[in-house]
Amino acid sequence: MTTRHHSVSNLSFRSFSTRRPGATVYVLVHGIGMSHRYFRRLHDELATDAEVHTIDLPGFGGVPTPGRSPGIREMAGALAGVLDGLGVREAVLVGQSMGSQWVVELALQRPDLTRAVVALGAVVDDRRRGALTQAALLARDSALEPPRLNGIVVSDYLRCGPVWYARQARHMLRYPIEDRVAELAVPLLLTRGSNDPIASQEWLQRLAARTTNAEIAVIEGHRHLAHFTAPRETAERLRAFSSRARPRSVPAADPARGTPPRPDR
Image 1 (tube, rainbow, N blue to C red):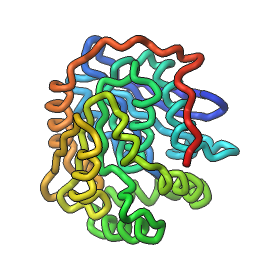
Image 2 (image 1 turned 120 degrees about the vertical axis):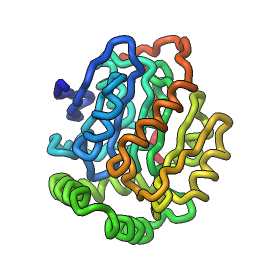
Image 3 (image 1 turned 45 degrees about the vertical axis):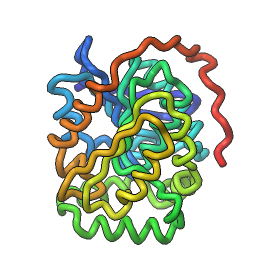
Image 4 (image 1 turned 180 degrees about the vertical axis):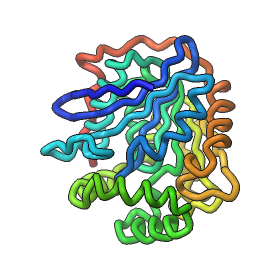
């Protein structure tokens, strides 16, 4: 695994890459407050037969915090610049929790980078979008996650800090992922742990109904961070989905221009 630091539009990123030329490419994007550390198990599972890039976003995992708080669309545009620097094309974009918002937006802005999209525990349920409701659901989930995992979560939250978390949470709560998935032109996999209180089955079904090419996968007996507690099963679901999402020929976007991001709502 190689580590690189990136700067795009005055935003800092860090990538962890396992190269495997000619293999399926996965890009893993963490959720709010988190970092590459809770993706390490899934990264290693996928890397046995695929190329994997795990990305730390600005202000998370010890990456420098910018002076401004970029919205979902701006962050996705900068993330595209990171993938350009890594030479990534036609990747399976995997986002967990808030990461699902960033990868959906990235797929819309840069279809040349995207083979398919995977949303692990997608947020935010449009019928439970309030900050207090989401905080209560997170506390409910965390109470029953394994102690080792909660240790990673708490330490990453401390490194992120409450101010940056709150500034990014504002964008998370406002982003209309249910509208944006309707515009996807690539296959979408929605996954959840069967005991996940944050991304409910009913919410995933409503998301899947908004697009014509979506699948739902449930990992029995796990919660919101099923990719950590069940990395092998999660990897198997991703491989099976990726094998059905065949590579396609898409004209490359001009990285210098890209697709102009819309203002965040």
